[in-house]
Amino acid sequence: MAELHVELVAADRKVWSGEASLVIARTTVGDIGIMPGHQPVLGVLRSGPVTIRTTGETGEGTVVVAVHGGFLSYTDGKLSLLAEVAELADEIDVQRAERSLEQAKADEDAEAERRASVRLQAAAAER
Image (cartoon, rainbow, N blue to C red; front, side, top):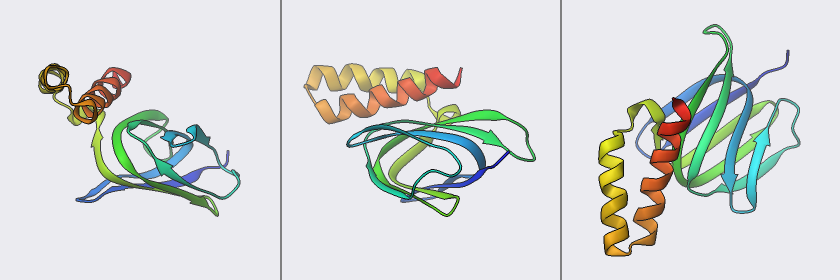
């Protein structure tokens, strides 16, 4: 089976790197699924969960990442996701994200509410 090489990098660190059969991300024009052999594409990432269906030495699995802004680029079997902020689902403190969501709603801060909501969606998808 064909694979694509994925690099997901945030401004402060390399978040995830490996082989995948499918990556689903949210862009400014809607959700996009990238599989091996996809047409070259460049897109702007919106806040949302990124789902990576992994393959390779560690076997098949799923990695979910809460991503907040950035870009994605696919060409020649390589997908690069350059995020402003990215957090692996298994790193998310759910109770803290829930408190952040409640505070954002109380403050009527739509951007903070969106970030907290994305973190909770990613954490829930990992389970």
